[in-house]
Length: 69
Image (cartoon, rainbow, N blue to C red; front, side):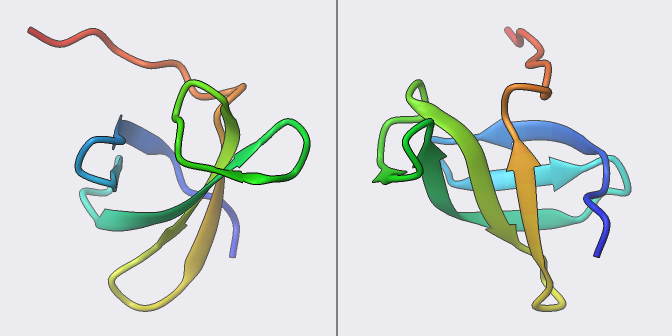
């Protein structure tokens, strides 16, 4: 499955929200060494599962976060 556009990432709640409105559960964060990490600041990729059971990889080096109030 092609990676859809990600609108928001919320690491504290473990959620990725896609531009289509689907909410996905972030299951794994991976650092630059390919190791699993719990630190979002160290992660370069995250893996998320869609409600339908598909798996997505999200390249965090490409993702541009938005500041919220």
